Image (cartoon, rainbow, N blue to C red; front, side, top):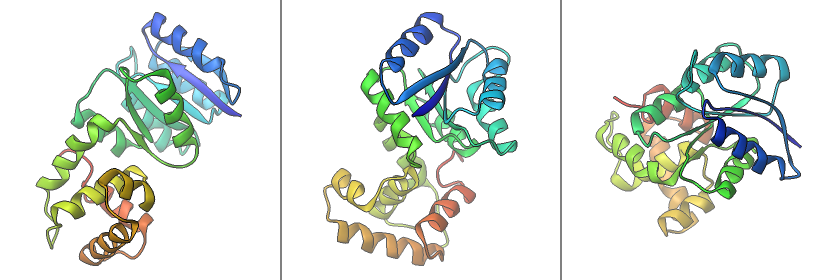
Length: 209
């Protein structure tokens, strides 16, 4: 069972999403709210597995909630569900600790899949944003500049995709993915995937310049 809270200041959207999620047997809705302060208090009081948060809300926005959840070291995983297809907002949210950034134009099935994905420990980003995030990575330099393919793979690794998923996305073999990852790690001097992801965040390879 995945315990959820929902926060969105648009009542029709919030009630519709709640109704749809409540029909799924693995989801349990603990609370809903129309402002950021109540959403944060629900997270503190109820300890949901996942919080589905709008970006723009009164009193406290979704990005600020994510940052506060991280500051307090709360266990709740946060997904931002928004109309903003802006890579700067998305990367700021990721930097603050959001595990998911999903556009509201997605279907309910995709929203459900995003919740399941972050609950399993991976990140979920709307596919439309991946090229925008990759473009930011392409403009950044490390001590030894990554190739275009290495940059694409690093973007997908940070998103939480496995070697098999990256291979499918880029239409290459898993062995090629592993080879590129080895080259990337050598260039930035890290020795594991978690360390590579940490390096990418620490050096702002997935946030705006």
